[in-house]
Image (cartoon, rainbow over all chains, first blue to last red; front, side, top):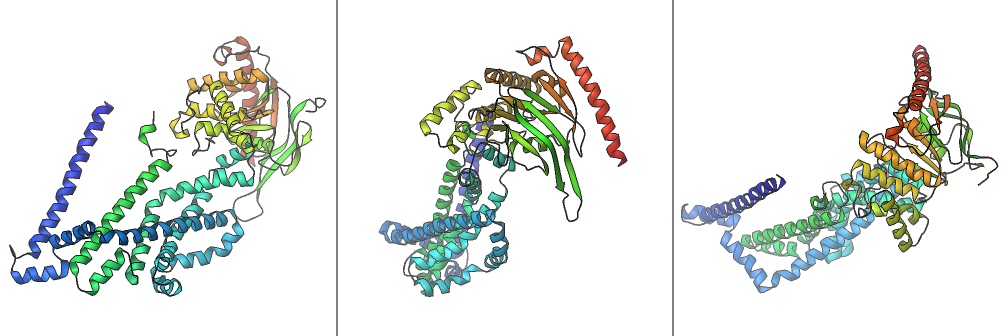
Length: 275
Length: 272
């Protein structure tokens, strides 16, 4: 019975993937038709091509980047910025979240400032970071950190607050000291919340990196887009967006993979381990 | 260790008063002037209507809660922090969900700084004793309700506590699993007779397991209403013992006392 059901799901999934591909194809064909003088007037095609670029040229540009090897250096820079922002932002958020969640006084004291800093549109800090840290990767990492920190911080804070009192008492009865409680109960509980917000925080680290590059840099995919925009090279801009999108999807898939590995203990996370 | 005193655990004139939720000077007395003594190796059940402060009493004995008045003595010594001689089995799931069954059972030894190889072996031994050999790699959510209780039992017993505090540990289980667990508990207990305080609202369970049944009044201001020695022979099988005439007699007797007093207490609380 379960076999039948599973097969059914798989067929639907396969179909779905096919429809997804078809939908993408339709969009590209429509794009192509609107920007070439086949069905539409030459003037209309010229105008749309100016604003939206031509799909074949965009794909060609993308192909050139990868085949010519030019893109890898920029992708690597963006990746490094994203990973650094994510790693440092998570570590800081975890530390601050644990500290404030376990210390009511510190929490009460810091509360309005945390709220204010979170409410502030932090992208506006990018120019300041550029002044402080220069146009290298540091200013991008700093921007990413400010974005990642708050996501992780609030999740850790929540995670610590929501530790089951029964589990906590159980650990105490088993003889846990304060440090052991922190390591075996609070941190794992907080980490589960951090992991469940991985998609958002990695995404934010990526946004920080790209926005930082776009506002001023010498390398990175955001820099490529900035350069192309300056030259009104709309095809390259779209190629850059395409690469960034694919890159973000790849990162997201990586996060899903890590999530499934790290949260095996969570109900519903890994069906294969179930009886 | 003080053999002279005889009592493994003594609650002396315990009163617990909580300040009511919200502002104001209103207070709520959960437990009032309760004295309860558990001898070494004695299995005592505490029964009472739901919400009568049974768990509060157990938390006091565990040192998780400080009484407003009164004193707790553990093996003759006054209790001021967590009760190191006691193991606690909770009503709700208390296993750490992010640890496998094996790691959960090892936890107490880990806290005590026991070497990894030693605690791994001992945890495997205990998992086998509670009938879960080969299930150590599973996480709590992958275990059935009964299996989780077995892990919790092993987690508690691996530390070899002198006193077991059990707060309606099997109340969430279906009746068959529950009786299996009760028999298993009796088997494990008879191996080295620890002192047990077993909280339950099920009188049958209380009689089938215990040497003595303490009946509590309805809350607020819970106090013991009566004690009944259970003279049923051991070893017992909880399924069979329920059918013996002596069991039925004891059940009738305690239920009679409990019902009368509980109703009296209920009526009193309604009048106030």
